[in-house]
Structure formats: structure tokens, C-alpha cells
Image 1: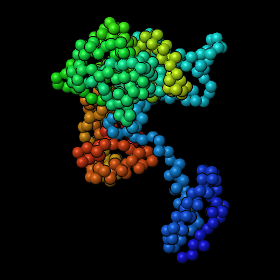
Image 2 (image 1 turned 30 degrees about the vertical axis):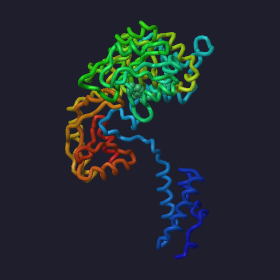
Image 3 (image 1 turned 90 degrees about the horizontal axis):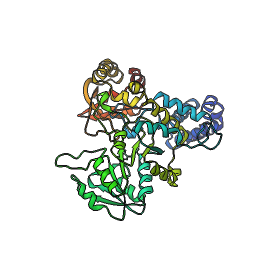
Image 4 (image 1 turned 60 degrees about the vertical axis):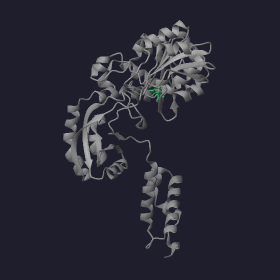
Length: 443
Ligand SMILES: *Cc1c(COP(=O)(O)O)cnc(C)c1O
């Protein structure tokens, strides 16, 4: 074999017009060099001709051009899947975000006076209206909200928390670690399963900066348990002249029972129960973009806004626009489930999902050449909301070789993500908006 017979890069580039138009000359040149280098190493016999080298370079460029962040079909059954990006935005929020990206926006500009405006002003009114709080501010996510609240109210002092609420949310978010970063000392009280009012009272001293209640988002302590209710804890805090911070985690702005779901504490309840500050996430049950909301007493919110960390943790205009549009939807709860994807998906009745599974079983079996049966399954809200409650759902069980099937579906142009359970690959159809999305991904 004579490697000198290989075409030169220049020769190949002369025939690569369409590729260059699609990807640009620089990366096409790199791709051709990479193909030629591989051929020189592997010395295939016979040597590929120019058209096949160009085709191989094209395949390489197509692979490179495909974003790893591309859309996937979430058929895991977990509606707010943290690793798949949590909440899907409402159309109104997508439009508002797009508009904010395309044109200048009056982000910190007061259109009435022509003077400087305030970034948070776009959300403050809505947040106060929807939660009953005096004031509100917004940061990057709820972890940031907890960080800045602790840093503002208890830096160099103690934050009193029940041992039953020292949560780890996942990744590096552990309540004790956040306390340390915020510069305050964690003062644990009670035991894992039982904490009493007297435990808090005994812990309060000259070093205390605040009392904190944390929603035990991703676990439940059951059996012989006791916790101090938020109103009682607020009374204990206020007797001592201290603020009560309530980290709700997911939080929700509406009573989910209206849509047949188990209740999560609402932000308005937490405010009414006497918390001075309440923190919650934008992209969990609320169904908006990633954000961390801080609502509560006016002077505390003002102090948080003066903290230099606020600038480091603030939201950009794109998310402010999307958040405002999302919050606005809550002013009309009657149409919320139609408009807010998170609620729409969570409230889909099992019968409707089963009917969808019945329609899709045969075409999916045909496309994949495997055995497909319709099964009942259980969806989860995800992101730490109602961890022990599941929602009856339905889907497709694919066999045999569920691992190989899962690998194959993950490798598609639009990857399909299911979950392996009991020797089958389960595709929970709760989050499949329309049949065509699945069938298109399979062809
Ligand atoms: C999810 C959660 C957080 C972290 O919120 P992010 O928005 O993910 O940063 C903090 N506290 C609790 C109780 C949570 O459930």
C-alpha cells in the first residue's frame, strides 16, 4: 500500500464546497486532517478514495456540531428531573425571554422618570401579591437564596436548626456546608427524629443570629417523631427578638389539591405562619426558570439587597423576563394547568396516559423490533417535592435487553431517556406532550 496515493488536504478542500458552506473552512480543514491522520495510522487496504474521505469528514463534523445540551425526551417519570433541567417553561415565558434577548429592555431604567430603575422591581409586585409578603428579592437559585439570607442575618453568629432538618439536596448543597460558606455557625438542636420547643429555647443566647426551618424536601422522617411547627417557632424567635427563616425548597404558590395532587406547603402559608424570610426555587414546582426567591419583611429584604453578594448572585434580564411571565400566569389559577407545563404534566390523568400508551405500543415495537407492552407505573414530581408520594401513570415496558435498549435510545438524534425497572426499560409517558414527538425521535 502506498500512502502517497492519498489525496492532499488541498485537493480534498477543493471538492468540499458544501461542507465548507455548512461548517466553515477552518473546522473542515481540521476534520480532513484528522481523517487523513487516522488513515495513515490504520493503513486500510485498499485506501479510501477522495469521496469516502469527504464523507467520513462530514460524519465527524456532524457529530461535533451536535450539542450535548440538545433536547431529549424525558420519559423517566420524574417530571422535575434535576439532571434533565427541571421545569419546562410556559410559552409566555419563552416568548418573554426571547424578546428580552433580541432587543434592549428597561432592566434598570425607569420608563416614567427616565432615571435609573431597579432590576428587582419587575418581580417584586407580583411576588408580594402572590405570597402576601411585604417585600421580595431574587437571586440565581434557592441555594444562593439560602446563602445570602444566612450571610446577611447571621454572619459571625449562630443559626439554630433542628438535627432533623440538616438536609443534603444533592451535589454540594448540604445545609452545614452552606452555613459555613455563609460565615455562620450551625447550632444543631434536638435529635434526628424529635426536636421540641425547649430545644430551640435552650439554644438561644447572645450569639444567636436567627432560627431556621428547612423543608425536608427529599426525605420523610416517619414513626416516633416530633417537630416544632412554623407558627410556634416564629413565636419562639420573636420572643427573643430574632428572625425566623423558612427554607421551603420547592415551595408552591397554589394549593396543589385543586389538581388532585398531594399538598405541599405554599409560600403564602409560610409567610402567614410568621416566618420573617421565606426562600424557594424558581424551577421546581413553581415551573419557571432557575431562580431563588426571597420574600419577607421589608427591612430584611433591604439588608439582603445591600449585601455585596447580591450583585454576584443576581439574575440576568432573560430569566427576569421569563420569571415575570411565569408569575403572571398565577394571577389566573383557573387556566394555570393549561398554561404551565409543570402543572399540566403533573395533573395528566392516568387514563389519558394509558390511552396514549395503547396508541404507541405497536408503532414503537415496529420501530425498535422489540417486545412492547403497556404497563401502569408511578411518576414522581422530582426535585425534592413530595418525595414519598407518587402519581399513578402509564407507559411502555420494552424487553428484552433493557440496558442495550436504553443505550440505543440515548444515542438517538433526540435522545429518549427512560428508566430500567424489573428487567424492562420503562418509558413513562406522563411527560410526552404528543405522540409524534416519540415517533419522530424513533425514525
Ligand atoms: C432544592 C432545595 C434547595 C436548593 O434549591 P436550588 O434552586 O436547587 O438551588 C434548597 N433547600 C431546599 C429545602 C431544597 O429543597
